[in-house]
Length: 328
Image (cartoon, rainbow, N blue to C red):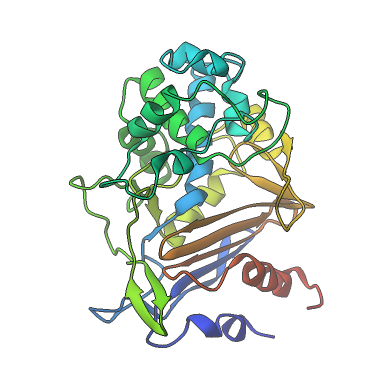
């Protein structure tokens, strides 16, 4: 089994992917497959920028941890200290509950309805949740994956820092790490360089499906990045140039047990934890991505794709196994 055989489905004239394998900080695989723009015939490559979807959550979590390091907020702060317009049902929810998907907040996607006009933003998520004086369960008592919690965390980053969310990420994470092409994308703002467009297979043909009603929410999934920039991000997760040892320990240690999924995992802050791996997937209309890290082996696999299928997590594990010396 070779890397190219595992990546065969992404090759050719359809929507593609970019694959990165880092071993001991060196890129042993760094290449693109297929096309990032079908209409223009642009090939995918190491600099292609994909919409990360929920892989973005690790950056939102890092932003909160940076502000905790600054003394601007605490992980134990009640959410209503920062967002007092939330109803009394949210009284017991802390930032830590939101980071670990144990807040019990109602899913904002379920509140939008099928006839939602235009795109919702993070502030719109807050407006929906302000009207919900109920939770799925008492804060901290159970796990339920919450995009809305991460949208609210982006708003809290803005309040605590005095910067808008894209500017905070740029100043505190992307610029210091040299992630010069990574941005939290806002329509009408800076364009995404080397942008991959998202596609879905519809009736046997690829159709551009780049945006949905929820694609403008930043905190839960609005970052664009490339495998080259994510190599810089991965390197920073091994030392304290960005996050202290204590902050990384919080992010990378089990804060809650993942339930209701077909895989076994715990959840840290913005990371899933399975065995000796730290990982997160990201899925949105036209994009499917995953980052898997084996920190003890100093091995990382990043697979970003601009298509709705196939699901990349299993492929990333298979690619990783080639470099872990494990049998297929």
